[in-house]
Image (cartoon, rainbow, N blue to C red):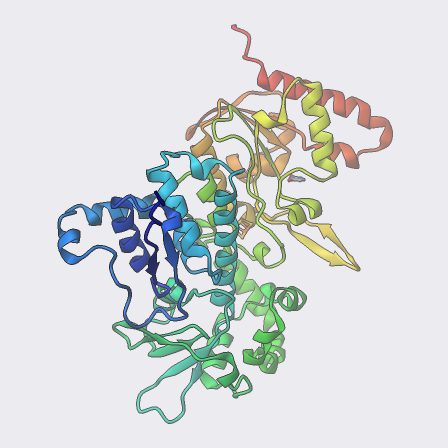
Length: 481
Ligand code: URA
Ligand code: SF4
């Protein structure tokens, strides 16, 4: 007897994550396997949403559909939401397959399995969308529309992904007092001072990117201008050419720079009280992977402007020993992993000599971005200053809270200053077990391995021996006294 082909559902969430979630909830309740669905991918989020798979009567017979929807939302997490706005036409397939595996496949730990292809793809796509949002926040420029009755501002931006809906609330927060429309190729968003509406986008070939940008933007730019953050080279590198046509700052940068010293002073004063990384933190108790992901978008201090990657801590979430270094160097910045350059190699050697396995440890830095000055084709490491160390501390606090290690080893003075404040002196603390009122772990200060690399050759063997001894002492339980 021929096996009846299972019916294929043709579904179209029209670029709306909410529509996808409702659809998925009904499909999962009906135990519909992923390969019985063909997800369509229309361009626009506007217009009618979908033909429900279940009839209204059937839906009503599942009174818990809302509950089910929120369970899927929770399981797919922030990454699910980001991926829903990716331009990849297969994203709905991926999201549904993961939702199905998490519920009916009983693979509850799927999203912690970094070797699983679906988990990896979720990670990669969500990273693309985060970056795209980061760029849109930095590069959207409004123009005033001349003949509008009321003040009205428009902006055009060409993101790589369909992020308009995801990012619109950010612009409402920042420009809530203006009436504005942002156009992208997929969708437009309009804020009338009270509500947000979405409509069709404008295809890129219909936009005149050479329109003059008007007074408002100049005023706005002059107000937020931050001379210490102007990194023209970094900007050019970061910003694909297509954004340049909508950037007016070249016209006014000269004027602003002339006023720079006073502004720099005021800025430094303002910075000492700034919130640093805090506004970028996710809610408490999120898994470490989410924390690391959110840190990718941190712009809590000026260092983020120069670096290529946020280098977050690395290691098992249940590690008992945590090592805190200073900040990533050139190689760490490129690899987006801590301690992989020369200091990292020396550290690996010392860990082995101290009978410790790097895989068991959680290794991080006090500051998560690489600070440097460019010199020719190289980048010279610069020490993070106290306000940058303070700015980055919220990430470190969250890592400590999440790992809750028994032992923390501080590598060098910067790590110590981060935990104990600017008054910390390594030479006074080395060799002592320290405690901190907010930290359960025993804290053990030692030198930074890079210090050994910088020392005169004849001093290196002894320094290395002492460093290894410190690592041993720190990780052995204190002898009862
Ligand atoms: N030095 C550090 O402090 N951290 C790194 O990740 C690399 C070098
Ligand atoms: Fe944020 Fe820290 Fe990077 Fe500064 S160094 S931008 S605070 S992650």
